[in-house]
Figure 1: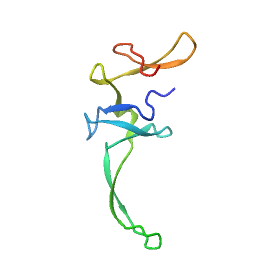
Figure 2 (figure 1 turned 45 degrees about the horizontal axis):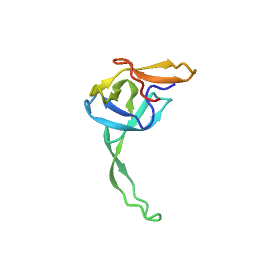
Figure 3 (figure 1 turned 180 degrees about the horizontal axis):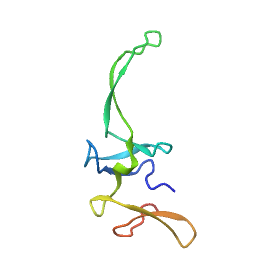
Length: 106
């Protein structure tokens, strides 16, 4: 089970965008990276294609961030928090915040 999933609200804890919050758009499992909305923006130079009607220029897009540089955002604590995985009584696995043992997804 993954500790960070698509749609989670995370906070960046290291790097140039430290302290910024955003929603996970995509998880790249092979590289242990996540793409967070409006975080780690880079400029990409794109060549135009007149046959398809595409214009060239400079586009801004989100680049992946390593999973170790983000933490799941805990709304009750108001900060990023470590996440653990525990098995519930009915046998399902669930994520929980380690600071207050509150379940993330029930």
